[in-house]
Length: 564
Image (cartoon, rainbow, N blue to C red; front, side):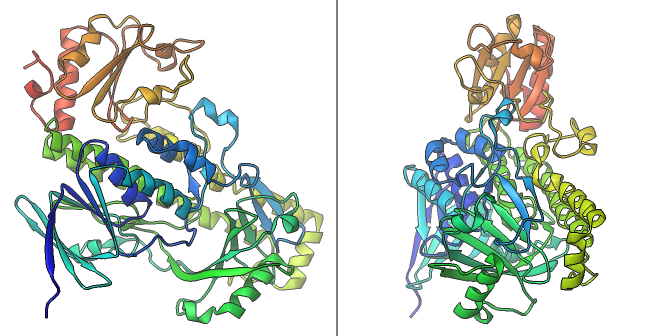
């Protein structure tokens, strides 16, 4: 007897209920788009996985209306997650340490949301609560995507209930694959992944223990372990409870090879002391890869997050890149569905986001190789092992110790990537900045870049002026008749004029942006700059209309009243 088949219609089917899929549902639903999220697991997985939400991701979360106070309430305490340590074991004297990203108040000059560390399940829980409050979202757990058939007017997909075998047919205008590195949607489309797949293999051991007393003042988020003993990485999501040990293993290792006794021994070796009340919560293997999908789109089906790119974890760029993906795609689908952009706008998703993934993957790889300088300084051989005598001699010798300290300091770009997080631009406007250290970030008001953050006199950010449902015109105080531009736009739009609608303390906003007093900036719903003008007048309005027409793939007379 064949399983019962039911049917449902929605505008967007999102396959995968992880952070990227859930955030996509939130972004789309807040723009009035009906969404169905299909997640194959019946409940949220409790393995901590990713741990960093960088400033740009947090800015996106804030713009999506997520409860930022709830996100911060479950994040790692700032005092606990501010450093990276290089150690032999958690009980041994440290080899060295380095600050982990910029989590202090000084970074608030360029973003209202400094980086935080948060266990992925905690972030997903906040996300899911917000998503379930959206009337236009349906979340189905325990439903596994089976197939999709693209038709002229959309996509028909089959989802199978993993418990009952029931098949649900979903008719949608679009499908977004957010189903992870092993994406079955991507594989079904035959989209190849470019880049090396098997750089290294690890077994992730998730455990609970209170290690605060063992750590003392050596508090941090990451602990890289070196020496003749266990070499791996510890992630301290919550030093009093939640930990992960990334244990190197062979390509043929399985979780069954890491039974309770093996895991407990590995944790004890990493800690270097007895671990009271240790609980092993789970074990999962994973393969380090550096790959990007050859294309992000097949007709009405799009790839986002890990379905489109796999990064080494060095740099914490994987989930954050996925958040940028879905932010870019969501507003474009909503604009097309609302009729103020043409379907060709969707082609810009791949051209804009794939190059960002290439850059971030390259940095993740560079971070991995950068650690090689520390292995070399500590006396490791080509096989990445070191004998105890050599290791001890290197630590004791003053000249070798200087090289070790230099190798630790050399990791700076690994753990301070503010320009990658906030300073990227769609297009070539910031191409010269690619030659700068990734820690060197100066906000710039250029086409394609994210609107620079400036604190308003009322404590908000200029980012808070951006309308997520349309275009935003932010004008200098003397923009004159250019301030009527937004009123003529047929796309949803808002306008803000310095002095009349907002104010900043100190130097004028227009001066900080490098604008003339008659200038203005036109901003996309995702906070990136679409056009900049230095003056008003009919000719300038026509030029801006032409820019919009080309980007939004819609005729000029559908963009701006009176410009045709």
